[in-house]
Image (cartoon, rainbow, N blue to C red; front, side, top):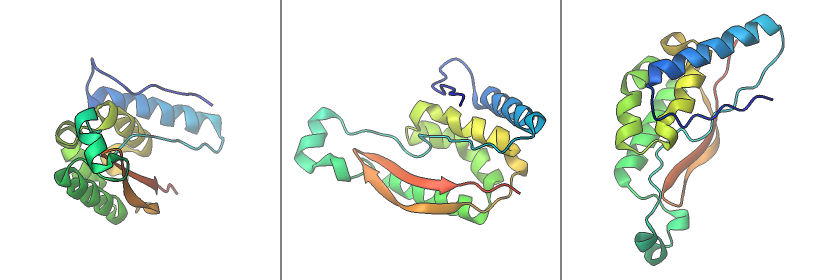
Length: 143
Protein backbone atom coordinates (compact mmCIF):
# COMPACT_ATOMS: atom_id res chain seq x y z
CA UNK A 1 0.00 0.00 0.00
CA UNK A 2 1.24 3.44 -0.93
CA UNK A 3 -0.49 6.53 0.43
CA UNK A 4 -0.18 9.81 -1.45
CA UNK A 5 -1.33 13.02 0.19
CA UNK A 6 -3.28 15.10 -2.30
CA UNK A 7 -3.62 18.39 -0.47
CA UNK A 8 -1.55 20.26 -3.01
CA UNK A 9 -1.36 24.02 -2.53
CA UNK A 10 1.53 24.87 -4.81
CA UNK A 11 0.77 23.13 -8.07
CA UNK A 12 -2.13 22.67 -10.47
CA UNK A 13 -4.26 19.75 -11.64
CA UNK A 14 -2.01 19.14 -14.63
CA UNK A 15 0.88 18.35 -12.29
CA UNK A 16 -1.35 15.98 -10.32
CA UNK A 17 -2.35 14.36 -13.63
CA UNK A 18 1.34 13.67 -14.28
CA UNK A 19 1.61 11.95 -10.89
CA UNK A 20 -1.37 9.79 -11.85
CA UNK A 21 0.27 8.92 -15.16
CA UNK A 22 3.41 7.84 -13.27
CA UNK A 23 1.27 5.65 -11.00
CA UNK A 24 -0.29 4.06 -14.09
CA UNK A 25 3.15 3.39 -15.60
CA UNK A 26 4.29 1.73 -12.36
CA UNK A 27 1.15 -0.41 -12.22
CA UNK A 28 1.57 -1.52 -15.85
CA UNK A 29 5.25 -2.35 -15.23
CA UNK A 30 4.37 -4.41 -12.17
CA UNK A 31 2.07 -6.86 -13.97
CA UNK A 32 -0.06 -6.91 -10.80
CA UNK A 33 -3.70 -6.24 -10.08
CA UNK A 34 -4.03 -2.93 -8.26
CA UNK A 35 -6.83 -1.02 -6.56
CA UNK A 36 -6.63 2.77 -6.60
CA UNK A 37 -8.65 4.64 -3.98
CA UNK A 38 -9.29 8.39 -4.20
CA UNK A 39 -11.14 10.12 -1.41
CA UNK A 40 -12.69 13.56 -1.16
CA UNK A 41 -13.88 14.16 -4.70
CA UNK A 42 -17.22 15.96 -4.43
CA UNK A 43 -18.30 19.26 -2.91
CA UNK A 44 -16.79 19.82 0.48
CA UNK A 45 -18.08 22.98 2.12
CA UNK A 46 -18.30 21.95 5.76
CA UNK A 47 -20.80 23.85 7.87
CA UNK A 48 -19.33 26.59 10.04
CA UNK A 49 -19.73 26.12 13.80
CA UNK A 50 -22.34 28.91 13.91
CA UNK A 51 -24.44 27.26 11.18
CA UNK A 52 -24.01 23.64 12.23
CA UNK A 53 -26.00 23.32 15.48
CA UNK A 54 -29.19 25.17 14.47
CA UNK A 55 -29.85 22.99 11.42
CA UNK A 56 -28.42 19.64 12.58
CA UNK A 57 -25.77 19.96 9.90
CA UNK A 58 -24.63 16.35 10.28
CA UNK A 59 -27.19 15.16 7.73
CA UNK A 60 -27.52 18.18 5.45
CA UNK A 61 -25.54 19.78 2.67
CA UNK A 62 -24.35 23.35 3.09
CA UNK A 63 -25.25 24.50 -0.43
CA UNK A 64 -27.99 23.56 -2.86
CA UNK A 65 -25.69 24.71 -5.66
CA UNK A 66 -23.07 22.22 -4.50
CA UNK A 67 -25.65 19.42 -4.29
CA UNK A 68 -26.84 20.10 -7.83
CA UNK A 69 -23.27 20.20 -9.13
CA UNK A 70 -22.45 16.94 -7.34
CA UNK A 71 -25.48 15.24 -8.89
CA UNK A 72 -24.53 16.52 -12.35
CA UNK A 73 -20.96 15.27 -11.90
CA UNK A 74 -22.24 11.83 -10.90
CA UNK A 75 -24.44 11.81 -14.00
CA UNK A 76 -21.42 12.64 -16.18
CA UNK A 77 -19.39 9.87 -14.55
CA UNK A 78 -22.18 7.32 -15.04
CA UNK A 79 -22.52 8.33 -18.69
CA UNK A 80 -18.78 8.14 -19.31
CA UNK A 81 -18.56 11.86 -20.06
CA UNK A 82 -15.21 12.27 -18.33
CA UNK A 83 -13.77 14.65 -20.93
CA UNK A 84 -16.45 17.24 -20.10
CA UNK A 85 -15.92 16.72 -16.37
CA UNK A 86 -12.18 17.30 -16.75
CA UNK A 87 -12.81 20.57 -18.60
CA UNK A 88 -14.72 21.82 -15.55
CA UNK A 89 -12.60 20.18 -12.82
CA UNK A 90 -10.76 23.33 -11.72
CA UNK A 91 -13.96 25.42 -11.59
CA UNK A 92 -15.85 22.65 -9.80
CA UNK A 93 -13.08 22.29 -7.22
CA UNK A 94 -12.98 26.05 -6.64
CA UNK A 95 -16.71 26.88 -6.61
CA UNK A 96 -17.83 23.77 -4.73
CA UNK A 97 -14.95 23.68 -2.23
CA UNK A 98 -13.52 20.40 -3.49
CA UNK A 99 -11.52 18.77 -0.72
CA UNK A 100 -7.81 19.35 -1.24
CA UNK A 101 -8.73 21.21 -4.45
CA UNK A 102 -9.54 17.75 -5.83
CA UNK A 103 -5.96 16.83 -6.62
CA UNK A 104 -6.83 13.24 -5.71
CA UNK A 105 -9.32 13.30 -8.59
CA UNK A 106 -6.70 14.66 -11.00
CA UNK A 107 -4.27 11.91 -9.94
CA UNK A 108 -6.96 9.24 -10.37
CA UNK A 109 -7.86 10.50 -13.83
CA UNK A 110 -4.17 10.65 -14.74
CA UNK A 111 -3.92 6.96 -13.83
CA UNK A 112 -7.08 6.20 -15.82
CA UNK A 113 -5.88 7.91 -18.99
CA UNK A 114 -7.24 11.44 -18.36
CA UNK A 115 -9.76 12.54 -21.01
CA UNK A 116 -9.36 9.29 -22.95
CA UNK A 117 -10.99 7.36 -20.10
CA UNK A 118 -14.51 6.36 -21.18
CA UNK A 119 -15.65 3.94 -18.47
CA UNK A 120 -19.21 4.24 -17.22
CA UNK A 121 -18.96 4.59 -13.48
CA UNK A 122 -21.07 2.60 -11.07
CA UNK A 123 -22.66 4.39 -8.11
CA UNK A 124 -22.22 1.96 -5.20
CA UNK A 125 -23.99 4.00 -2.51
CA UNK A 126 -26.65 6.67 -2.94
CA UNK A 127 -25.46 10.26 -2.74
CA UNK A 128 -25.80 11.60 0.79
CA UNK A 129 -24.87 14.79 2.66
CA UNK A 130 -22.66 14.79 5.73
CA UNK A 131 -21.71 17.86 7.78
CA UNK A 132 -22.31 20.04 4.75
CA UNK A 133 -20.39 17.90 2.25
CA UNK A 134 -21.55 15.64 -0.60
CA UNK A 135 -20.68 11.96 -0.18
CA UNK A 136 -20.92 8.87 -2.41
CA UNK A 137 -18.96 5.74 -3.30
CA UNK A 138 -18.24 5.24 -7.01
CA UNK A 139 -16.41 2.56 -8.98
CA UNK A 140 -14.41 3.63 -12.05
CA UNK A 141 -14.14 0.40 -14.07
CA UNK A 142 -11.13 -0.45 -16.22
CA UNK A 143 -10.87 -3.10 -18.92
